[in-house]
Length: 267
Length: 335
Image 1 (cartoon, rainbow over the protein chains, first blue to last red):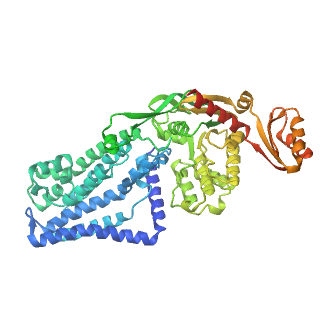
Image 2 (cartoon, rainbow over the protein chains, first blue to last red):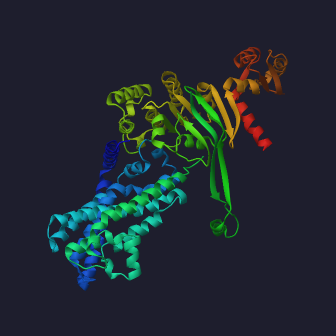
């Protein structure tokens, strides 16, 4: 199975699922709006808090907005590919996963692209808008290095986000459910992802840096161009994609291994 | 060349033992016991071009066997090969060789027109455009799919959907076809279309077919070979004709006559043609046992109705049904 062939099939699946969704036009528009509203709400909360307290751990509202935009854009990027993973519980419990296993394409890819959730459009749009707006507000030079750092951070962030959905999703094959765990990680990322990890207590900070490497999604990569000191050396901001690849690889390995325990339904 | 080979194939399903009574939920949560359900298949060699009926009572492990051969389930024990490939170790390669239809669950894209599902599958299996066009045209024609080709799958009737599923499974001309209860819930016409389609595919492409069903008409029509399993044991493996001969089943003919003909019915009961005999006689009603090896049921009916005014009559059980029920029941006793 060549890579180009696999990619072209994924593209066909994506196009097909978008076409499928477009059938329900009203629902499509409503979901996009809901997605946008949901993501903006988080930002409004931060804005409300910061307009009262001016700064968070020494970071201004504008800088926090940058973190928020980076995190949300990475989340949107992740959602573009992995939004359908949330349905794994249903697929596994009801045996719908069967159909992915009898086709000559990796089952995870089929799961990912069997349908695209339209709320994703809200996440992506929200992320881009807030990120772009924040970039005009903060004091960052538009150097090639900074742009590269930003793009790499988005990719790394998406991979880290994906890893902590795919990894827990592997448990579904054994326990038939993993959504609680997936929601916990999703919640951690959306609640803490856009605040400077430095404000947290040391043990929590360490967990969110070295175990669930959330700090690599926005905080560490943004610190360097903003000229901020962190509890790690400046160059660690460049490690986002590497960290992302490592945790994502681990999650993928876990998923493939655990899927051997798939029991289907009925017998 | 044997196309499907399975040896000591075992699948164990583990689930915690359910407690009942007080605090059953909590006790189930902390229990260490578990119940093992075995679904097994032992040694079966299928030759190219064979259509094999795979029978067994509900829960006998038929679907489990198919799922292991299709690469969906990883067996707890044993080994099998489909066209030289171990299904669960090389899923993609196995997928190229097999077509699978589950009567209970569609594999088509729910929100897309049927035609798009076919296109996606053609793409997945890397079909040349020319070959895809030819195959699609042939299938649309053979399964009468033109009227609903552009309808989203979720709006199809069960019969239409099954035609679609079948088309999707044979589009890329796999040498092996697994059909898991393909006629369940279908009306007579849809069943017939299904059967003649499988017949034709098997004849034209020498496709090997493994068919599980509870509809014995499917089996009688399509399968030369029958395997009956239960709880992992093979109860019978051989030709359908041998099965019938071995268990020499009889058909039962129930006859009801007009009230003024009870005496004549008694006479008929005592002078039935060779191969038929009376097993019960109760006023207007009588039941005759017929050995179809000796005399055709139709001949007995003709004979009886020429001699008494028949109000109602019925033939009970197709031969295979009777045999299979006998086998299932014998198993209940020996267990």
